[in-house]
Each structure stands twice: as structure tokens, then as C-alpha cells.
Length: 405
Figure 1: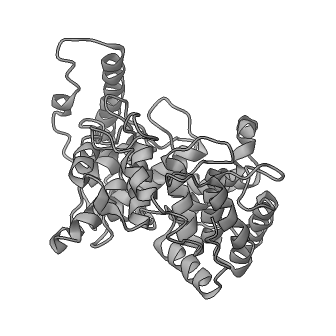
Figure 2 (figure 1 turned 120 degrees about the horizontal axis):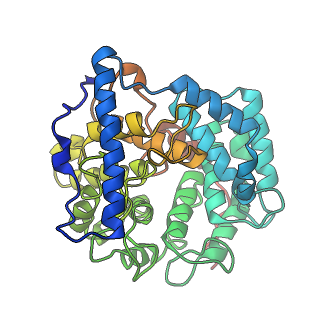
Figure 3 (figure 1 turned 90 degrees about the vertical axis):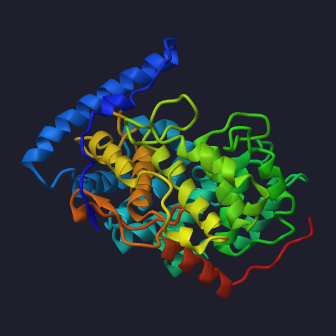
């Protein structure tokens, strides 16, 4: 369903009020609002001439992403230990844009990720690197996006399950790698991997839900670990993990809802990651995907809420389309920031969430209907049918169960 652009009312009324006390935080917020407001005003004049605006530059973004998949710029050399992440971010972005590479290229991707797989289970950031839950999650998602028998069969699920056991602590938390930090990202990545590949067992995730709830803060969001500050990425990991474990009833859902809806910025329309922080395009997904999950939880008690979208879909799309697209292709945090693969993936993912809401009704598309992206699964952040296909393939090919720990 095509939607009209928001009326450009006097959005200066929505500016941040520092209540007469200027701080570095309030000054930075005012600076960002001034830049965004100027861009919105300039866009308003362009939109009067071209009714097809705002436009998602799909071809430009796809061309850049495909070039990145084959040859990365030199400035990405610092991410040598994150290569499965780069592959996942690129493939998922291309799927959203409906421009997946050829089968030959995808087969080459499978071959490379196989070289990243560790003999003890899991995937490292590159060949011969130690396995890490983050890069394992990225590799499993990338292989599920490819979705071929070659991709599925390349995963050593028996070793993968053993790897998860080595990272689990007695309190239900998961380290990100052997001897590494234990935070909520580990629990989410472990649950997503285990569910997608059908190696989940109740014993493996015993007490995990209780540990996650201990990370929920007085604000309502989730921190990386108990006692820290609520944060958008960690909050997504927390509630998504509880949903995967079917244990959402143990958290304070009302407090989570209150915290989440207050992260959408009044003037910009995008989301901030934490209280009193700046808008950032990547939180279009990290914060935006929380709210369809919350809608589904609330709809368990009130079926009429299944189609309720708990944030301003139009405002988020406008921020992404007008402020986050780089003229050279790719997407970015905010105006003035450089484009990168990470923000391209999660900003497009957030745009998909904003367009499809809870997934229960028609798409809500700002600008031309051609701006519509494919849907993404709010728990795994790959296409819903690709997550379904992977799970059902692995159900038909169960691995040995290891509950000896």
C-alpha cells in the first residue's frame, strides 16, 4: 500500500528541549537535528517537483554490494576477523533488494565459509581463526540465505553443538568464545544458531532465560550483562532470545515497551540506541525489530493486537530514505557519516521492518511502491521463508544429541 509523505509541519516544535541546561549531549543533539531539519526542508522542495520521491536507489546499492562481495576496499582490512559477518551483511542486503548473486558466486561463498569452520565446531572470523559465536551466527545466517543442499551440508552440526556446550556457563549465560566475555549477545547467537540448525535442547539452554532477565534494567531495556546500561542492540538480543526460547513471560514486557517506543526520535524519525544518545540508522533494525516481537507477545493475550504497529513506520522510512542513503551507494548512520557494509545491512533491515510492520497486513511503503523490500524475520534477520527452509531441512537430517554436559 503506497503512503504519502508526512506533512512537513513545523517539526521545529519537536526539537530537543535542554530545559536551559546545555551539555555536550544536548549540543550534539541540537546539531544533528539542525542538519536533519535542513535536509528535510530541502527534500520538501524536491518532492513538490518529483512525486516519485523519496526513492530507494536499489540498483546503486546492489551494484556496490556485489562489488564489495568480490573485492573489499583496503580500509576493511581491519575486519579480517569478521569476514563471515561481511558476507552475511552483504547477502542479506542483496536479498532484501531482490538481487542475490549467481549460483556460482554463492557456491564460492559456501566454499570460503567451510574454510572458516573450525574442527572443534563453530566458525572463526577467517580461515584458521579461532571460533566465535558472533561469526558462527553470521555464517549460519549466510548459509541459510544461500539455502542450497551444499550450504546446509557444509555445517558440521555435531561439532557445532559441542562448541556451544563449551561456551555455556552453569548460570545459563554463554561466552562469545573460549575464555571470552559473557554477555547477552552470546545467549542470543547461541539460541538463534541452535534453533536454525535444529541442535537446540532444553538442557543446553537451562537457566538461560533467567540469566537474560537479570540483564533487564530499571529503564525496561536490556543491558549486555547484569548491572549495565540498557542498549538497543542488547535489548534486541534479550527479547529475541527469550522469544526463541519461548520464555517471554519471564520479563517485564510493559517496561520494555515503554523504553522501546521512547527511543524513536521525534524530529528525525529514526531510532537512538540508548537514552540521550543520537539517532543512528542501524538502530532502525535493532530497535525497530523489538516492537514487532513485542506486538506478537501482546497478541498472545489479545488477538486484535496482532496487526498493531508500535512505532511510526512512515517517520522511520523517511529518515532512512532521505537521510541515510549515500549518493555513491550504500547506507549510513546519519548525514555526514560514511557509508559502510554494517549500516547498509541494518538500515535496510530496519526499512523492511518499517514497511512490513508485524507482517500481518499490507505493506506500508513511503514513496514509490518500487521502494518495497523483501520481508525479514524479526528474530533471525533473514527472510522468514529462508529461516523456515533451513529449520525444516535440518529437522529432516537430525544430528546426534549431546546432553552430557
